[in-house]
Image 1 (cartoon, each protein chain N blue to C red):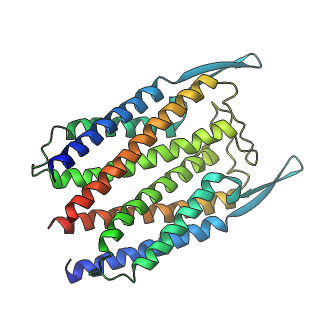
Image 2 (cartoon, rainbow over the protein chains, first blue to last red; image 1 turned 120 degrees about the vertical axis):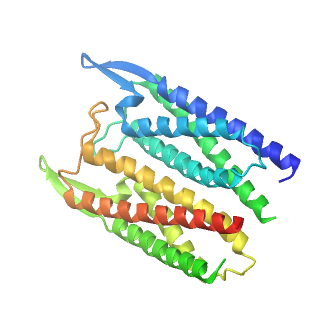
Image 3 (cartoon, one colour; image 1 turned 90 degrees about the vertical axis):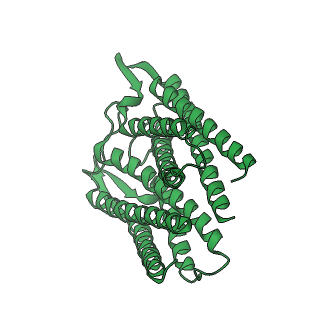
Length: 156
Length: 156
């Protein structure tokens, strides 16, 4: 890999680390409550297992992205890093899609299944989840670009 | 790639094609209805946008897997196939995870959000969705193995 290529991948990894860290923090701190018919209704990420999966996946990807920054591109570990890049890309795309599916039901509901939207009541929570999803989506795209770029350079 | 390697990838692509085709057909034909309080309640995949995304992703992956079977491993298109393998792996993991998240709410509900489970009423529909998800999950794993194997051979 050329020097420009190394700087490019380093920059992408830094961006991915930041995006995944942001996604984790925004999702974990998302919280809101509303009163419906005198009953307090509390919304937080830990109420939904898909959001918990999202937080774990983003945190793992964030930690991995940081660790890889300190591995030299000439190291023998390069082969392992490429394989782990595939696993992390799959993990990120999987967690963002799952969380997005639940967030979509939260926003629009599903009249066929009788699931009502909740975003009207817990607006702040929904906004934070949207923010976390955007950060997670950006991280997944960065990892996809990183992986495709690595594959491209391996072939040259 | 050795002759054994070529047969191995060919076999994996054939299996992936079969699994994605099965996932598409099982999801598309999933249908059930129930009567709740004198109202007929109909369950089908097209009522939920995530399941529609699942069907499109599985159908695309099935078509791609079939087409790639006819591309020689010595062809100049090999580089493109590897890049498309990354895209298809990401697409499959994303669609299976999203559909799984919705199916989980359908089976268990979410008491915090007031979403009731529907599988008690439309048992047949839920069983078919589970079947489609298993086939989709198998296809995603096959593609992940295929991708990791290709990366491994490129490095040797």
